[in-house]
Length: 418
Image (cartoon, rainbow, N blue to C red):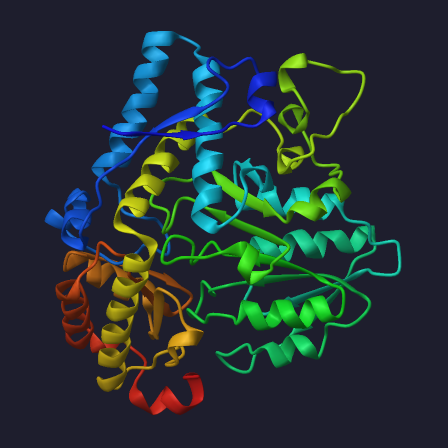
């Protein structure tokens, strides 16, 4: 099997890793959508449409977790190997989003990534504004609301029902705005923000853009350099097909040296294994935003998930997801149900939300029919990945029709739909 040589940064040498000059990565054959689906055993028993909460478990990720356990059994404490695995993950994720590896911090959660950036910003100068939309996930909102004690002034871009257009941000972004956190796809209604347009707006006023891509990463391609965002946070437990406990923070290269977070730890140093306690030094890479010991078991799983997606191809993933979202949204709309997710393709991601009168009960009813979905409030969430197919869509629609007494009646459509 062919090998591809990928260079490591000097950081690896400072950690005294074996063979620090390169990583050896096996090239893998491509997968078709059917082959991709076959690697997820749950589809032999269930219809899984809950990637917005947790990606399905593949045989590849399961094997990677066992690989970590075996390395622990065999080596006892093979930290050189484990740290190198984290570095492989950094390289693989950077390539998947069009970034450079030194622009990526490997974090234990999205919350940790957001907090690291927030703690490095100065709200006491001329710019103290934080402009946020009403579709943010609680973590993003809470971190920036907490900065009000440090001088941040939070202003809200107000939604118009189930829509949040860039015009709403334009009303609150100005020369006092320091940063604009923005979710790409809303976890409550599936609305997709026009991040390119928002970035243009914010940069025209000198404000940073902090993209939360958690509800989209892995469902299609993204190029952070082309998009122009300043920061991006995401994690592995949804469409990246791994587990909780590992996330990524992207920092635009020219911003890295400006950031000295007060939320820090020993892995945020130039060489963690120097074990210095008398000073803080800052590496010239996004690793300066990292904290404690890296999430090694999760790195094994995350690498396996990324490998699966690469073998299928992100363009193929996007095509499959869009086809299924269109089929599902059109079908539930035609059935008279109240659909909270916009109809325009550019304004939606892999998640479609239908209004229920008792969504927890609906989730339970669907589970009894072998369908795994989720809800937030009374919004029934159905999300698609490349492992789903047309038969999954049609089965969910049939189940909703059979359980339609638990869905919002058509009379509510004009008031609730975007």
